[in-house]
Image (cartoon, rainbow, N blue to C red; front, side, top):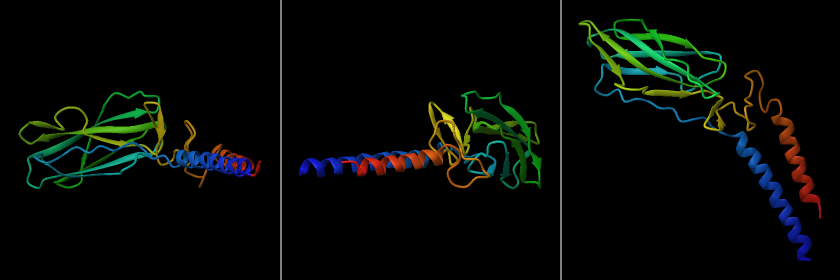
Length: 193
């Protein structure tokens, strides 16, 4: 008696495990964004999106402390793509909106994993200050990224290299048939004695 019931229970557990593994891979999240500390600098506030949209633009807004000696700002960006390659850093001149606020945008590659950046503040007396002093202080991940052998992001659906197209809701492409197949297999395994 236990042989039949135990077999049925074991098959049900295997089926649930298959469904749970598929659900976990579909719900993968993106990388961890990094934010530099601006305390002690002439930067009062930095505003940007918390997610890079592949093939879109990335807007940047920076406000300096009122009355600071800043006369212009450069935004040094570096875009890294899903193949593991990072493009050379690019210098972007920020446009002054008013005496304390600067803005600009950059185009994002269709296969971007993330964008790094730092700022160079130029003062009226000819000095420049890099924030941070070395390296890039900020990093924002895309909605579909590949990093060190792992895929992720808000649009990642659990199949290596497959991200959800923006115009489709739910599970796109191969993911919907795979989810249906997993559920069918789970039902068959659970019913088999």
